[in-house]
Image (cartoon, rainbow, N blue to C red; front, side):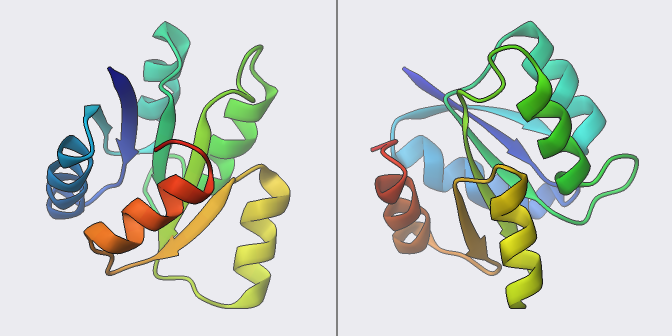
Length: 121
């Protein structure tokens, strides 16, 4: 079964994402900040990471930079998921190594489409 790490400081967002992704046959691991997400990745990389931008301790951008520098850290498909919608933020995320970008609030159709675009489903 494919795995997805859902990284968001909002338990509500994590719960919504879990419900959507489990419906797409993903096994879900959750983390509430980038630091905890890195700990998960050190134990083994998920197939996918749904990543919030704005979080305490370590934000999504910093997490992504750390992830991509790890041996094998280029393997997970990373989909940034945030309220930041200006072109500069999107370009920064993609330049840092994100595979795709979705806006909050999201729904099953949006997540499905983006996961299809990056080859996860």
